[in-house]
Length: 450
Ligand SMILES: Cc1ncc(COP(=O)(O)O)c(C=O)c1O
Image (tube, rainbow, N blue to C red; front, side, top):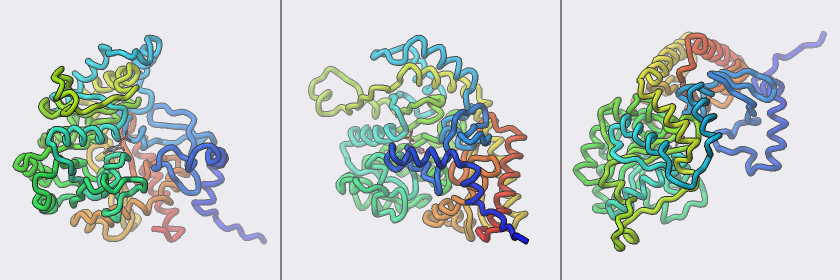
Protein backbone atom coordinates (compact mmCIF):
# COMPACT_ATOMS: atom_id res chain seq x y z
CA UNK A 1 0.00 0.00 0.00
CA UNK A 2 1.35 3.39 -0.98
CA UNK A 3 2.02 5.70 1.94
CA UNK A 4 1.22 9.35 1.21
CA UNK A 5 3.13 11.95 3.12
CA UNK A 6 1.20 15.14 3.83
CA UNK A 7 2.52 17.96 1.70
CA UNK A 8 4.54 20.66 3.39
CA UNK A 9 3.57 24.32 3.47
CA UNK A 10 6.20 24.96 0.82
CA UNK A 11 5.00 22.17 -1.51
CA UNK A 12 1.40 23.31 -1.23
CA UNK A 13 2.42 26.91 -1.88
CA UNK A 14 4.29 25.97 -5.04
CA UNK A 15 1.27 24.04 -6.34
CA UNK A 16 -1.42 26.59 -5.44
CA UNK A 17 0.49 29.56 -6.85
CA UNK A 18 2.08 27.89 -9.89
CA UNK A 19 1.21 30.66 -12.38
CA UNK A 20 2.94 33.16 -10.10
CA UNK A 21 6.01 30.92 -10.25
CA UNK A 22 5.90 31.06 -14.06
CA UNK A 23 5.58 34.85 -14.07
CA UNK A 24 8.46 35.15 -11.65
CA UNK A 25 10.63 33.13 -14.03
CA UNK A 26 9.71 35.50 -16.85
CA UNK A 27 10.27 38.49 -14.62
CA UNK A 28 13.77 37.41 -13.68
CA UNK A 29 14.80 37.71 -17.30
CA UNK A 30 13.36 41.22 -17.59
CA UNK A 31 13.48 42.92 -14.17
CA UNK A 32 16.66 43.26 -12.12
CA UNK A 33 16.29 40.94 -9.16
CA UNK A 34 12.87 39.88 -10.52
CA UNK A 35 10.93 42.23 -8.23
CA UNK A 36 10.16 45.94 -8.06
CA UNK A 37 10.25 46.53 -4.27
CA UNK A 38 12.61 44.73 -1.90
CA UNK A 39 9.70 43.96 0.46
CA UNK A 40 8.27 41.69 -2.23
CA UNK A 41 11.33 39.48 -2.16
CA UNK A 42 9.75 36.20 -1.11
CA UNK A 43 10.90 32.60 -1.18
CA UNK A 44 10.29 30.57 -3.28
CA UNK A 45 8.64 33.29 -5.41
CA UNK A 46 6.33 36.29 -4.92
CA UNK A 47 2.65 36.20 -5.86
CA UNK A 48 1.30 38.05 -8.89
CA UNK A 49 -2.02 39.84 -8.55
CA UNK A 50 -4.48 40.62 -11.32
CA UNK A 51 -7.14 42.79 -9.73
CA UNK A 52 -8.45 44.04 -6.40
CA UNK A 53 -11.70 45.30 -4.91
CA UNK A 54 -12.61 46.36 -1.37
CA UNK A 55 -10.73 44.06 1.01
CA UNK A 56 -9.85 41.41 -1.58
CA UNK A 57 -7.40 40.81 -4.39
CA UNK A 58 -7.23 37.98 -6.93
CA UNK A 59 -4.02 36.48 -8.16
CA UNK A 60 -3.11 35.04 -11.57
CA UNK A 61 -4.03 31.51 -10.40
CA UNK A 62 -7.54 32.73 -9.50
CA UNK A 63 -6.94 32.60 -5.73
CA UNK A 64 -9.06 35.10 -3.78
CA UNK A 65 -6.98 36.73 -1.06
CA UNK A 66 -8.05 38.89 1.85
CA UNK A 67 -5.58 41.76 1.70
CA UNK A 68 -3.71 43.26 4.65
CA UNK A 69 -1.05 45.01 2.54
CA UNK A 70 -3.62 47.61 1.57
CA UNK A 71 -1.25 49.29 -0.85
CA UNK A 72 1.62 49.26 1.70
CA UNK A 73 -0.68 51.23 3.98
CA UNK A 74 -1.92 53.72 1.36
CA UNK A 75 -5.46 52.30 1.20
CA UNK A 76 -7.17 53.28 4.44
CA UNK A 77 -10.41 53.24 2.43
CA UNK A 78 -9.78 49.83 0.84
CA UNK A 79 -9.25 49.05 -2.83
CA UNK A 80 -11.19 51.17 -5.32
CA UNK A 81 -13.24 53.27 -2.91
CA UNK A 82 -16.10 54.58 -5.10
CA UNK A 83 -15.49 58.26 -4.27
CA UNK A 84 -11.79 58.01 -5.09
CA UNK A 85 -12.50 56.05 -8.28
CA UNK A 86 -15.05 58.70 -9.37
CA UNK A 87 -12.61 61.56 -8.68
CA UNK A 88 -9.79 59.85 -10.58
CA UNK A 89 -12.07 58.85 -13.48
CA UNK A 90 -13.30 62.42 -13.83
CA UNK A 91 -9.79 63.80 -13.66
CA UNK A 92 -8.33 61.45 -16.27
CA UNK A 93 -10.60 63.04 -18.87
CA UNK A 94 -9.54 66.53 -17.81
CA UNK A 95 -5.81 65.84 -18.16
CA UNK A 96 -3.17 63.93 -16.24
CA UNK A 97 -0.47 66.61 -16.28
CA UNK A 98 -0.80 70.32 -17.00
CA UNK A 99 2.82 71.35 -16.62
CA UNK A 100 1.29 74.14 -14.57
CA UNK A 101 -0.13 74.94 -11.16
CA UNK A 102 -3.75 73.94 -10.63
CA UNK A 103 -6.55 74.47 -8.11
CA UNK A 104 -6.71 70.85 -6.95
CA UNK A 105 -3.16 71.03 -5.54
CA UNK A 106 -4.14 74.10 -3.52
CA UNK A 107 -7.30 72.46 -2.19
CA UNK A 108 -5.31 69.30 -1.37
CA UNK A 109 -2.71 71.31 0.58
CA UNK A 110 -5.47 73.22 2.41
CA UNK A 111 -7.07 69.95 3.47
CA UNK A 112 -3.72 68.71 4.82
CA UNK A 113 -3.33 71.99 6.74
CA UNK A 114 -6.75 71.43 8.29
CA UNK A 115 -5.88 67.90 9.42
CA UNK A 116 -2.20 67.83 10.50
CA UNK A 117 -1.35 70.01 13.53
CA UNK A 118 2.22 70.85 12.39
CA UNK A 119 1.20 71.72 8.81
CA UNK A 120 1.62 75.49 8.66
CA UNK A 121 2.84 74.95 5.10
CA UNK A 122 2.80 72.00 2.71
CA UNK A 123 5.18 71.01 -0.07
CA UNK A 124 4.41 68.02 -2.29
CA UNK A 125 6.75 65.20 -3.37
CA UNK A 126 6.09 61.94 -5.21
CA UNK A 127 6.88 59.48 -2.44
CA UNK A 128 7.74 59.05 1.23
CA UNK A 129 11.39 58.53 0.30
CA UNK A 130 11.45 61.91 -1.41
CA UNK A 131 9.63 63.46 1.53
CA UNK A 132 12.21 62.35 4.12
CA UNK A 133 15.06 63.32 1.78
CA UNK A 134 13.57 66.80 1.33
CA UNK A 135 12.76 67.23 5.03
CA UNK A 136 16.40 66.52 5.90
CA UNK A 137 17.62 68.96 3.25
CA UNK A 138 15.21 71.64 4.52
CA UNK A 139 16.43 71.12 8.10
CA UNK A 140 20.09 71.21 7.04
CA UNK A 141 19.53 74.40 5.04
CA UNK A 142 17.54 76.05 7.83
CA UNK A 143 20.08 75.32 10.57
CA UNK A 144 23.25 75.45 8.47
CA UNK A 145 24.28 72.14 10.08
CA UNK A 146 24.94 68.80 8.42
CA UNK A 147 24.28 65.92 10.78
CA UNK A 148 20.94 64.21 11.33
CA UNK A 149 20.13 61.86 14.20
CA UNK A 150 17.96 58.85 13.38
CA UNK A 151 16.99 55.76 15.37
CA UNK A 152 18.21 52.19 14.94
CA UNK A 153 15.61 50.11 13.12
CA UNK A 154 13.42 53.02 12.02
CA UNK A 155 12.56 53.15 8.32
CA UNK A 156 12.60 56.36 6.31
CA UNK A 157 12.64 55.12 2.72
CA UNK A 158 15.56 54.08 0.59
CA UNK A 159 17.60 57.19 -0.30
CA UNK A 160 21.27 57.30 0.70
CA UNK A 161 20.76 59.09 4.04
CA UNK A 162 18.04 56.64 5.10
CA UNK A 163 20.33 53.63 4.65
CA UNK A 164 22.46 54.38 7.71
CA UNK A 165 21.24 52.63 10.86
CA UNK A 166 18.22 50.93 9.32
CA UNK A 167 19.04 47.24 9.83
CA UNK A 168 21.63 45.52 12.02
CA UNK A 169 24.57 45.97 12.17
CA UNK A 170 23.58 49.60 12.65
CA UNK A 171 27.07 51.00 12.00
CA UNK A 172 27.00 49.79 8.38
CA UNK A 173 24.56 51.21 5.79
CA UNK A 174 21.87 48.68 4.92
CA UNK A 175 22.58 49.13 1.22
CA UNK A 176 25.91 49.22 -0.53
CA UNK A 177 26.56 52.10 -2.89
CA UNK A 178 26.13 54.76 -0.20
CA UNK A 179 29.05 57.24 -0.08
CA UNK A 180 30.89 57.15 3.22
CA UNK A 181 30.46 60.91 3.66
CA UNK A 182 26.68 60.56 3.41
CA UNK A 183 26.57 57.72 5.94
CA UNK A 184 28.83 59.65 8.31
CA UNK A 185 26.45 62.59 8.29
CA UNK A 186 23.84 60.33 9.95
CA UNK A 187 24.11 59.58 13.67
CA UNK A 188 22.30 56.55 15.03
CA UNK A 189 20.56 56.81 18.42
CA UNK A 190 18.73 54.09 20.30
CA UNK A 191 14.89 54.06 20.27
CA UNK A 192 13.19 55.01 23.56
CA UNK A 193 16.55 56.08 24.98
CA UNK A 194 16.74 59.85 25.41
CA UNK A 195 20.24 59.59 26.88
CA UNK A 196 21.54 58.16 23.59
CA UNK A 197 20.21 61.26 21.82
CA UNK A 198 21.65 63.61 24.42
CA UNK A 199 25.06 61.91 24.14
CA UNK A 200 25.13 62.36 20.37
CA UNK A 201 24.14 66.02 20.70
CA UNK A 202 26.88 66.54 23.31
CA UNK A 203 29.45 64.73 21.18
CA UNK A 204 28.63 66.87 18.12
CA UNK A 205 27.98 70.36 19.48
CA UNK A 206 26.55 72.76 16.89
CA UNK A 207 26.58 70.07 14.18
CA UNK A 208 23.14 68.46 14.39
CA UNK A 209 20.42 69.84 12.12
CA UNK A 210 17.59 67.45 12.92
CA UNK A 211 16.29 64.37 14.65
CA UNK A 212 14.02 62.13 12.55
CA UNK A 213 11.78 59.50 14.16
CA UNK A 214 8.89 57.22 13.28
CA UNK A 215 6.57 58.39 16.07
CA UNK A 216 4.42 55.27 15.87
CA UNK A 217 7.42 52.98 16.32
CA UNK A 218 10.33 51.82 14.16
CA UNK A 219 9.66 49.89 10.96
CA UNK A 220 5.93 50.38 11.18
CA UNK A 221 5.59 49.64 14.86
CA UNK A 222 7.71 46.52 15.32
CA UNK A 223 9.91 48.59 17.66
CA UNK A 224 7.21 50.36 19.68
CA UNK A 225 7.88 54.00 20.57
CA UNK A 226 7.08 55.09 24.05
CA UNK A 227 5.07 58.34 24.22
CA UNK A 228 7.04 59.73 27.18
CA UNK A 229 10.14 59.31 25.07
CA UNK A 230 8.56 61.36 22.26
CA UNK A 231 7.74 64.10 24.75
CA UNK A 232 11.32 64.09 26.06
CA UNK A 233 12.58 64.23 22.49
CA UNK A 234 10.38 67.26 21.80
CA UNK A 235 11.78 69.06 24.85
CA UNK A 236 15.39 68.18 24.05
CA UNK A 237 15.11 69.31 20.41
CA UNK A 238 13.58 72.62 21.51
CA UNK A 239 16.34 73.16 24.11
CA UNK A 240 19.10 72.40 21.58
CA UNK A 241 17.48 74.23 18.66
CA UNK A 242 17.36 71.08 16.59
CA UNK A 243 14.56 70.45 14.06
CA UNK A 244 12.31 67.58 15.12
CA UNK A 245 10.99 65.62 12.13
CA UNK A 246 8.17 63.12 12.56
CA UNK A 247 8.10 60.61 9.74
CA UNK A 248 4.35 60.06 9.52
CA UNK A 249 4.39 58.34 6.15
CA UNK A 250 2.44 55.49 7.76
CA UNK A 251 0.90 57.08 10.85
CA UNK A 252 -0.37 60.22 9.11
CA UNK A 253 -4.21 60.09 8.89
CA UNK A 254 -4.03 56.55 10.32
CA UNK A 255 -3.21 56.98 14.03
CA UNK A 256 -5.72 59.80 14.09
CA UNK A 257 -6.94 62.12 11.32
CA UNK A 258 -4.08 64.39 12.43
CA UNK A 259 -1.57 61.53 12.67
CA UNK A 260 0.50 60.31 15.62
CA UNK A 261 1.24 63.93 16.56
CA UNK A 262 -2.44 64.56 17.21
CA UNK A 263 -2.96 61.24 18.99
CA UNK A 264 0.01 61.75 21.32
CA UNK A 265 -0.23 65.54 21.64
CA UNK A 266 3.43 66.03 20.60
CA UNK A 267 3.95 68.50 17.74
CA UNK A 268 7.08 68.20 15.58
CA UNK A 269 8.61 71.06 13.58
CA UNK A 270 8.42 69.16 10.31
CA UNK A 271 6.38 66.11 9.27
CA UNK A 272 6.78 63.78 6.30
CA UNK A 273 3.68 62.26 4.74
CA UNK A 274 2.96 59.78 1.91
CA UNK A 275 0.69 56.74 1.37
CA UNK A 276 -2.81 57.78 2.59
CA UNK A 277 -2.06 61.43 1.72
CA UNK A 278 -2.45 60.63 -1.98
CA UNK A 279 -5.50 58.38 -1.69
CA UNK A 280 -3.86 55.31 -3.26
CA UNK A 281 -2.02 57.10 -6.06
CA UNK A 282 1.65 58.10 -5.87
CA UNK A 283 2.42 61.12 -3.71
CA UNK A 284 4.00 62.51 -0.59
CA UNK A 285 4.51 65.77 1.24
CA UNK A 286 6.72 67.64 3.65
CA UNK A 287 4.74 69.86 5.99
CA UNK A 288 5.88 72.08 8.83
CA UNK A 289 6.65 75.47 10.24
CA UNK A 290 6.70 78.52 7.96
CA UNK A 291 10.16 79.65 9.02
CA UNK A 292 11.66 76.23 8.23
CA UNK A 293 9.84 75.54 4.95
CA UNK A 294 10.65 79.11 3.93
CA UNK A 295 14.01 77.74 2.77
CA UNK A 296 12.06 76.60 -0.29
CA UNK A 297 10.69 80.09 -1.12
CA UNK A 298 11.93 82.32 -3.92
CA UNK A 299 12.29 85.80 -2.46
CA UNK A 300 13.71 87.60 -5.50
CA UNK A 301 16.71 88.47 -3.36
CA UNK A 302 19.73 87.20 -5.31
CA UNK A 303 21.87 86.00 -2.42
CA UNK A 304 18.98 84.12 -0.77
CA UNK A 305 17.75 82.57 -3.98
CA UNK A 306 21.16 81.21 -4.97
CA UNK A 307 22.84 80.46 -1.63
CA UNK A 308 20.15 79.97 1.03
CA UNK A 309 17.37 78.26 -0.86
CA UNK A 310 16.55 74.57 -1.14
CA UNK A 311 15.93 73.41 -4.68
CA UNK A 312 13.15 70.92 -5.29
CA UNK A 313 11.70 69.77 -8.57
CA UNK A 314 9.88 66.60 -9.64
CA UNK A 315 7.91 66.15 -12.86
CA UNK A 316 4.94 64.50 -11.20
CA UNK A 317 4.74 66.40 -7.88
CA UNK A 318 1.08 67.09 -7.08
CA UNK A 319 -0.01 65.92 -10.52
CA UNK A 320 -3.77 66.32 -11.02
CA UNK A 321 -4.47 62.58 -10.75
CA UNK A 322 -2.77 62.23 -7.36
CA UNK A 323 -4.30 65.50 -6.21
CA UNK A 324 -7.81 64.33 -7.13
CA UNK A 325 -7.38 61.01 -5.31
CA UNK A 326 -5.62 62.59 -2.32
CA UNK A 327 -8.11 65.41 -1.83
CA UNK A 328 -11.06 63.02 -2.04
CA UNK A 329 -9.53 60.55 0.42
CA UNK A 330 -8.57 63.29 2.88
CA UNK A 331 -12.04 64.81 2.74
CA UNK A 332 -13.35 61.45 3.93
CA UNK A 333 -10.57 61.23 6.56
CA UNK A 334 -11.71 64.68 7.73
CA UNK A 335 -15.06 63.13 8.71
CA UNK A 336 -13.21 61.16 11.39
CA UNK A 337 -14.96 57.84 11.02
CA UNK A 338 -12.61 56.08 8.55
CA UNK A 339 -9.58 56.38 10.84
CA UNK A 340 -11.64 55.35 13.85
CA UNK A 341 -13.36 52.44 12.15
CA UNK A 342 -10.06 51.08 10.80
CA UNK A 343 -8.48 51.47 14.26
CA UNK A 344 -11.34 49.59 15.93
CA UNK A 345 -10.86 46.77 13.44
CA UNK A 346 -7.12 46.83 14.23
CA UNK A 347 -7.71 46.49 17.96
CA UNK A 348 -10.27 43.70 17.49
CA UNK A 349 -7.81 41.83 15.30
CA UNK A 350 -4.81 42.27 17.63
CA UNK A 351 -6.80 40.93 20.59
CA UNK A 352 -8.07 37.93 18.63
CA UNK A 353 -4.61 37.08 17.24
CA UNK A 354 -3.11 37.19 20.75
CA UNK A 355 -5.82 34.74 21.80
CA UNK A 356 -4.73 32.33 19.08
CA UNK A 357 -1.10 32.53 20.22
CA UNK A 358 -2.24 31.72 23.74
CA UNK A 359 -4.59 28.90 22.78
CA UNK A 360 -1.97 27.22 20.64
CA UNK A 361 0.81 27.77 23.15
CA UNK A 362 3.03 29.32 20.48
CA UNK A 363 5.65 31.91 21.46
CA UNK A 364 5.20 35.33 19.90
CA UNK A 365 3.61 38.75 20.27
CA UNK A 366 1.12 40.86 18.37
CA UNK A 367 2.10 44.51 18.31
CA UNK A 368 0.67 47.63 16.72
CA UNK A 369 -1.59 50.53 17.31
CA UNK A 370 -4.62 52.02 15.56
CA UNK A 371 -5.01 50.14 12.25
CA UNK A 372 -1.55 48.53 12.23
CA UNK A 373 -0.78 45.02 13.43
CA UNK A 374 2.53 43.17 13.56
CA UNK A 375 3.04 39.49 14.42
CA UNK A 376 6.49 38.60 15.77
CA UNK A 377 7.39 34.96 16.35
CA UNK A 378 9.82 33.54 18.86
CA UNK A 379 10.60 33.19 22.53
CA UNK A 380 11.16 36.22 24.74
CA UNK A 381 9.44 38.77 22.51
CA UNK A 382 7.60 40.36 25.47
CA UNK A 383 10.93 41.04 27.07
CA UNK A 384 12.33 42.39 23.80
CA UNK A 385 9.39 44.82 23.68
CA UNK A 386 9.82 45.85 27.32
CA UNK A 387 13.54 46.52 26.87
CA UNK A 388 13.32 47.85 23.28
CA UNK A 389 15.73 45.16 22.12
CA UNK A 390 15.82 46.28 18.49
CA UNK A 391 17.82 43.37 17.12
CA UNK A 392 15.56 40.76 18.66
CA UNK A 393 12.42 42.55 17.57
CA UNK A 394 13.71 42.74 14.01
CA UNK A 395 14.68 39.06 14.15
CA UNK A 396 11.12 38.22 15.27
CA UNK A 397 9.88 39.71 12.03
CA UNK A 398 12.45 37.76 10.06
CA UNK A 399 10.93 34.48 11.25
CA UNK A 400 7.59 34.96 9.55
CA UNK A 401 8.30 33.91 5.96
CA UNK A 402 6.72 30.49 6.38
CA UNK A 403 3.84 31.99 8.35
CA UNK A 404 3.08 34.28 5.44
CA UNK A 405 3.12 31.32 3.03
CA UNK A 406 0.75 29.40 5.29
CA UNK A 407 -1.54 32.45 5.54
CA UNK A 408 -1.62 32.72 1.73
CA UNK A 409 -2.65 29.07 1.54
CA UNK A 410 -5.49 30.00 3.91
CA UNK A 411 -6.54 32.92 1.69
CA UNK A 412 -4.98 35.86 3.56
CA UNK A 413 -2.11 38.06 2.36
CA UNK A 414 -0.09 39.51 5.24
CA UNK A 415 2.26 42.39 4.61
CA UNK A 416 5.39 40.53 5.69
CA UNK A 417 4.78 40.23 9.45
CA UNK A 418 1.36 41.83 9.68
CA UNK A 419 -0.20 44.74 7.89
CA UNK A 420 -3.12 47.09 8.04
CA UNK A 421 -6.82 47.11 8.66
CA UNK A 422 -8.97 49.54 6.72
CA UNK A 423 -12.63 50.46 6.59
CA UNK A 424 -13.30 47.37 4.47
CA UNK A 425 -12.12 44.97 7.17
CA UNK A 426 -15.39 44.19 8.89
CA UNK A 427 -16.26 41.36 11.32
CA UNK A 428 -16.34 38.67 8.60
CA UNK A 429 -12.94 39.72 7.24
CA UNK A 430 -11.37 39.80 10.70
CA UNK A 431 -12.80 36.37 11.49
CA UNK A 432 -11.26 35.04 8.27
CA UNK A 433 -7.83 36.39 9.21
CA UNK A 434 -8.06 34.95 12.71
CA UNK A 435 -9.11 31.54 11.42
CA UNK A 436 -6.33 31.59 8.83
CA UNK A 437 -3.84 32.46 11.57
CA UNK A 438 -5.07 29.59 13.71
CA UNK A 439 -4.73 27.10 10.85
CA UNK A 440 -1.37 28.53 9.83
CA UNK A 441 0.07 28.20 13.33
CA UNK A 442 -1.25 24.65 13.40
CA UNK A 443 0.56 23.94 10.13
CA UNK A 444 3.75 25.53 11.46
CA UNK A 445 3.49 23.42 14.61
CA UNK A 446 3.04 20.29 12.49
CA UNK A 447 6.29 21.10 10.73
CA UNK A 448 8.06 21.91 13.98
CA UNK A 449 8.41 25.58 13.03
CA UNK A 450 6.41 27.06 15.92
C1 LIG B 1 7.88 55.48 7.87
C2 LIG B 1 8.20 55.46 6.40
N1 LIG B 1 8.92 56.44 5.87
C3 LIG B 1 9.21 56.48 4.56
C4 LIG B 1 8.77 55.50 3.71
C5 LIG B 1 9.09 55.55 2.24
O1 LIG B 1 7.96 55.84 1.52
P1 LIG B 1 7.86 55.44 -0.02
O2 LIG B 1 7.75 53.97 -0.09
O3 LIG B 1 6.61 56.16 -0.50
O4 LIG B 1 9.07 55.97 -0.69
C6 LIG B 1 8.00 54.45 4.22
C7 LIG B 1 7.51 53.37 3.32
O5 LIG B 1 7.01 52.36 3.73
C8 LIG B 1 7.72 54.41 5.61
O6 LIG B 1 7.03 53.41 6.14
